Image 1 (cartoon, rainbow over the protein chains, first blue to last red):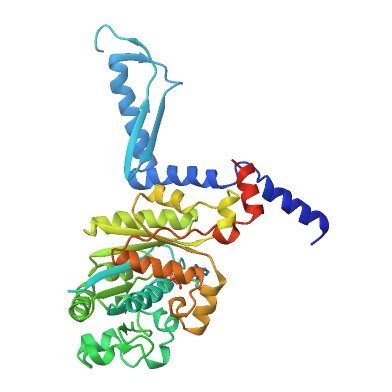
Image 2: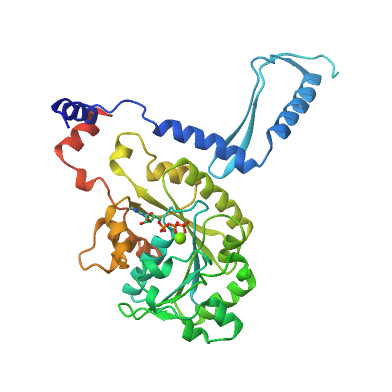
Length: 94
Length: 265
Ligand SMILES: Nc1ncnc2c1ncn2[C@@H]1O[C@H](COP(=O)(O)OP(=O)(O)OP(=O)(O)O)[C@@H](O)[C@H]1O
Ligand SMILES: [Mg+2]
């Protein structure tokens, strides 16, 4: 080990590079487990999204671009989160 | 009736057999009687980790076939008279035994011992199903790595589906310096993700490998090493004692460590 690497290691210990891989791995795990636990195939998820969009659009006009649809988990419970920015409520149901 | 506990993981090589051997020894040191059941038919290891490989005569299969009595198949440990091993067959595969037969053997053992610890094979197929069949509770072993935690999570689902509600977590092979450098998930990260109670943590330590080489579980040492204390603590928690979590940072609690933690806030 050269003097330089020793100094480098020392500095790295003093100021660990922010982030590291720990936050990445937690985020990836949380995402993959939300899907594992829900046991939904990507096809089923997509079909469900389309059908929900269909139903919602009968009642409201919404921003399709800004729509978010995801599985999230808290403790051992998986939640389906749909975030639908509404532009306008329709006067009558289509 | 004794408690029937399966030690399981999903992913292979994370430390199930090491944990089974050490917990068995630790519980007998606490005055309990313990039967260890090797459920890893075809790939048995538990006899080796205990240093009992030369004393295996019969296996679970001979007991089931009526070729010997249960008592004859049990290998008693000379170092710890309260400990006995029921070996798995090595020259057969996982389908050599059924879940019902595992249940039958475990129940017989539970009549005579305070604990029956079942060393589960890796995977979630027939060997796993055999191992969990008799269990009332489970110890789930994982390492702080993404693949191991994912598999562990799958196993939690399968255990619950099988009606095993009492599941607790052991996080093995923690490397405190990597956790401090934010390059490894911490015990609380893993526990938060799996959302099951923690039975304990074990550091990654070369003494674990050395003890395996010798066939002498760590908890037998007169002066317990850090991983030895870790296993001993898990045994005490199984017994219902409140034992504070092992502080793995303590040995690194030097000026450097404190400085680093100060700057990384
Ligand atoms: N805390 C630890 N520190 C260092 N090495 C460890 C630790 N725990 C386990 N090991 C090593 O990891 C290897 C696998 O351990 P072990 O056989 O207990 O795993 P397992 O889950 O039973 O594996 P399998 O799925 O094949 O049955 C062994 O070589 C063991 O010595
Ligand atoms: Mg094993």
